[in-house]
Length: 436
Image: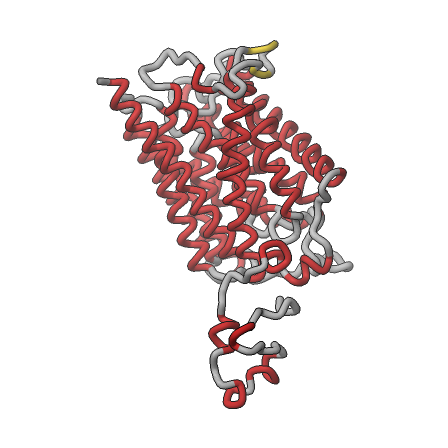
């Protein structure tokens, strides 16, 4: 009976984690410019297709196969269902849940390289993340034979294994890729590109927040685990705290409550609590979330000062707060935390783990960027970027307003003269490829 209940719970949790990709899609589509909204959505489809298949075929074996020197797995390639679990859970359910984590790691990178990356390069990147980047560090942290796991590192649901690795890989790739045209000026100043649709980005955030309950509680892999409810409420409190502090800080610092910063404040709280959601008290979850809400503001400013163009703030949200969440376990863990028990040992292990995943993320991101550069080409051409990646790579705009206007009498509305868009005859009408 327990195996049946666990199977139902973990499959449901995996479905919720995979549904978070819808949240990533809406979030990124809302934060980029209109001419690139289809492209970011297509990249999320790549995550769910190419990424899922690559992880099932190779990545799962690298992560959970028979260990070689504490570094990587060497079995289960093409046969992940053959893993032997000590818990009451079918192997297929475990593989599906882990697949959701792998796909999430790719989507972190997606936002940071938005609006100027070659679509073929992104396909290759998605495969490499699920074959090499995520599974290797995941093996170190989550495999029972991994070297960081043997040291006693704690990362319950992936602040380090997913978010920090993905965030710093995104930093390296965004730096090598270069900024969007016109983002930074020669005098060192920067230009802000207005998001296309904040309500759309907000809807994506709500979906991500919803899915995060499965992201964290599902990591118990056991529906009867007594920590289930405390994990869920810690997740809620940290997200709420992060969003609250980010909102008030932007009001104080900029004079207005910035919606994009509040969105990223919520996500930062969720990222930061992911490592310690099963190990800290509710008050400490609020503190962790509050600190993450501060970190995301100043990390965003730091990334800008480094002249790294991150359209959605993925590096600040996932990279910096993934590291903070990892270290926070060493501070607030109820049984070993420095601030709760006075013990230093866990904090030192968490600090080591955080440094390792940052370095690995940067190396992995740079490696993937160079592989893409030497093979399919890393960056979209200047013309493709100016035109918009929606039309350049997918041949369709996100919003069909041009068709709607084109059905109006052009003599009455003087459409061509006021917009500069040539309206084709109704039977053969196509959107001009000069429209950006």
